[in-house]
Image (spheres, rainbow, N blue to C red):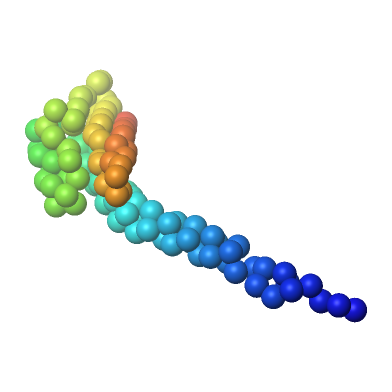
Length: 120
């Protein structure tokens, strides 16, 4: 049996392409995961404020959410936060856009957090 000379380095190009794809995936994860953690932290703070609505007024809730967003370096403004009480419920809506900068492109990641809880 004769071996073909093409077999010797046949997998190098495929390995290189796979490595490049892996590096791109790692870079994207490096950019997105920290922002996703901050967003989840803010979502939890909003949920906690909704649960404690009976002990805070609307302005205190809004101020607390804005303070937490500032600590997390998320671009939430006062106009992005809506707090309203309807009968025995409180509704909190927070809408904002987080820019994630990639080389040559900025992705605008739109977020909408909605909490509706009974007020005790």
